[in-house]
Amino acid sequence: MPSSDPVGDMLAMIKNAYGRRHKRMSLPHSRMKEGVAKVLRSEGYIEDVKSIQDEKKPERKTLHLYLKYDSNGESVISEIKRVSKPGCRIFRGVDSLGRIMDGLGVQVLSTSKGIMSDRQARKDRVGGELICKVW
Image (tube, rainbow, N blue to C red; front, top):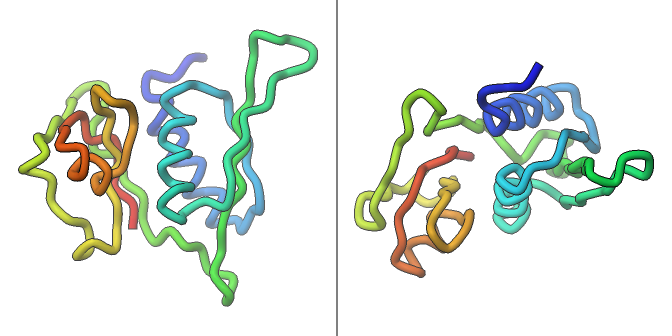
């Protein structure tokens, strides 16, 4: 059954995979999920992201996320929360983007220039839909 919130499902899967101490997780590919995962990788919350084409069905892709842990074996993500949901979209201008944990966390936004972190959005002076918060 198709999900009404695939990004929310992805974030829940990431949380669950970290809770079970998995090294890698797989999920169905979408450009939005891949964009969020690449932002998490660039901000240091995920080790790597790979998009793999299915050999049997070339039109299907799978997204592989390689999770990151600190030297004590604890996950580098303390919390990951979905903000904008399909039933209630949340948009923020560049001037109204707050800081998460005094700059230690990151917000992921979908902007007219693509999916990016709040740091990059401030640098590019663009606002957009607030997808999630991570710290």
